[in-house]
Image (cartoon, rainbow, N blue to C red; front, top):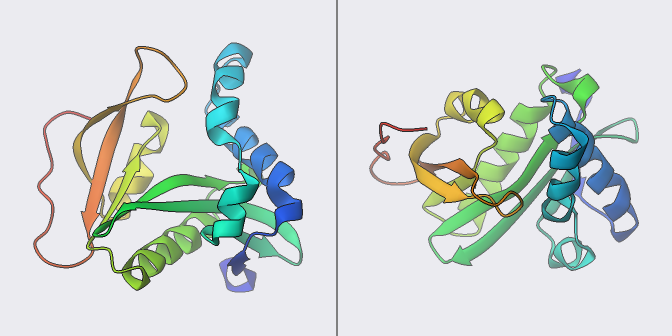
Length: 165
């Protein structure tokens, strides 16, 4: 399937569909209804983010299969705010297409580092993409929950991994 995939900027009219995709993808890990309700705000694709131009979709023949949102708060780092794959497309190369695009965009934006706060279930994916655990970040949805914080050097010295995920 990966050879038929197309990546492009998201359109404003897709915000709700992309939010729904992110919710389905998060639910893939077996989280309960209450947990998912708490995550909705953080997984919502905002129209202003789409207008800013760093929300991307992967599609196959018009079917949305993945979403990626990047943010840049520091000149030298880009953060992966959202990266989700339609559950039926997991393992088909969609995640790799999104990730490769995230790295390319981060470089184009002048970043030396790419960062992400990872769902613990997705930690293996990020590590296969070359990310290293550098600490923990508080969840923006679940009080008291922390998430592995990962980073990857896009230029210069590799990032050292810490012991805890």
